[in-house]
Length: 221
Image (cartoon, rainbow, N blue to C red; front, top):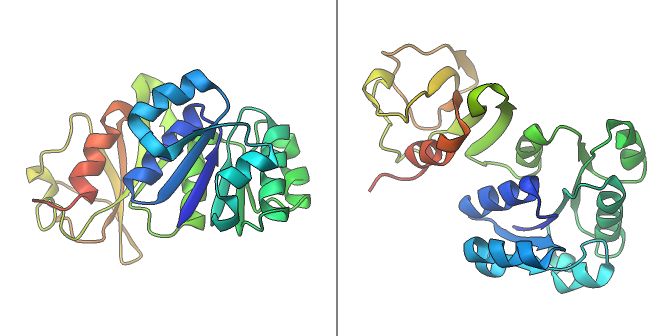
């Protein structure tokens, strides 16, 4: 699956990093050359400098073969144009636009944008609806002490499988608040054993999200 992310702000950077980690083919388009130079150190060929609102840029990015185009710039007008060009000129199957002013959401939908997100903290959840089986989804950022709520699907080969929660060495300040197992909601205790495919709702520090993701979603070696 090929995904184009338009806009290299905090949201675009986070989306690109997460999707690359999950193994998707991703290209981030950013207008600012200085940002591109910085991002290139981490993303390599997955970063392209250009104006995503221009058809020539999207053409160079390979929009004709893209499965999803996600416009997350800070300007609603740009996000609308990007998605419209992607859908009408390049026939992209799915378009997702960040809407900075919630009053514009209805207009975006009327003009054919497949999905809109006004709260950037749940944009990964929206992407998950378009791209099935993402094992790690950032649900909500909390203001207090840089905390976040994330949803994690446990890999069958994760080192935590078949262990009680109380015996797992989680990152500091991680709280498992709930879990879904075969569609059933469970409020876990220390004695709860983690099974393959369990979906955990976790409160964690944002700085520890990557460590938590590696623990639960990457195969043990």
